[in-house]
Image (cartoon, rainbow, N blue to C red):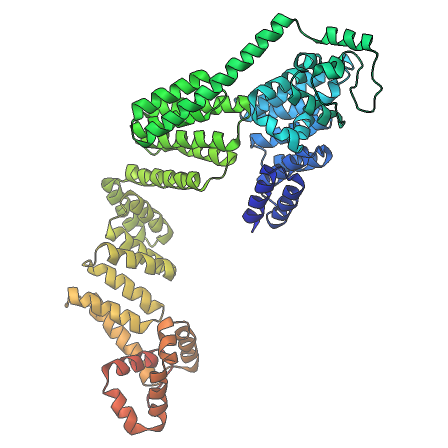
Length: 580
């Protein structure tokens, strides 16, 4: 239920509905109050709404529960930054970087916090809009507004906002971009005039450009425009660069489509060429790298695949790409590392990559790959640990302790023998004997059954299992086990003695020689046996039992049926029925 609430919260967060996301994360926390990820997610949702005073306690709780998780310190730093507590923000980001020195989100947060602290120490910004662009609150407001949320997917817009955030005076360089003007209106919570810089006077000096403000004199407006506008040659150059960049992006997408088509046709070399060309044309879309990595993976060029995945993760962090894209790169890296693994230790980097991918985005396919890698690692560990010679030595040590009646020590050495050679039935047989001496009957029964499973012709396994069942007072089952062993070795004295003991106990019940205490104990145990329960609930057997009491002739007819007679004998052995 907690996972379901978390998933709903993630979906609401992704769609920009932060209030609803907070509600779902709160429900999840109620169900799973020790899950650090839930507090982290709710802190992010509060921060996205600009509620940093609420985001801070959740970030602190995240760090408290999981102090070795770098992302918790990223949340903590963001909350402090939003509250303009830059010194605490810097401390939080630095602690996170001590855990993960290459974490780009922490590096970026630290840089922003230090810049904000520096601006704060110098006093108010020379730009009247400086405060609007400071700290993570700027990104939260732009994400929350449906009009500007889409702009954050455009790398050129993000770069412009980063430039303005570093130096608010850079605002004058981007006044002709309508996206920047719309963003400024959102940040200042005002409605700006429509049109280009000429309509707004270039935003020079103290101009606010609000609809409610009185229009300036033409002379002042012209003067402001002259101050704000760049040189015509520079402006034309910037326009040319923008057009060239846009054209390159379109060409890169066409190369990607060509690469996808070649990949589907298994024309891998051609696909590589197309994706490489796309990377050259546009280095702000990491899907070109992840796609090329997929081709290298298919070709068995695992080192090249890993290199592309690392580059995609690094670049994705710089661009603040979608978490799903970063997770995809990490998953492909893990897959390539798993393909290269030859020893159990080789799987550790792959497992680490899958874990990192899941922290970015919990994908079922990634989780399956992680489980497969962990299972393969465990199997290799068992293979690497396999040593029949050492297993025999450990079993002999166990035998010595068994003779000295030091059964816990014997169990320890038999267990090591099994780890060294899990296919040796003798080690299981000997450990079953030790467990029996210690009174650990369920463990002894499990080992005896494993012994028979490994070698059905190993007679000792039947004597071990029969002895355990006898001590558990399951005399009819013990009798069946001893008889199964006698089919392999009819003259085995241990098995013959076991049969005799079982028959004595069964006959004792048949004769009614059990004490009231023994009868009560046996009946209570029998009622927990599924086989006895099935017999008692069988309508035919219920009629047979009634006939045994009320109709001697009918009872004699029933006794001629071997199946009925066998079931009655089980009830007699269990003390449920007593024959007079």
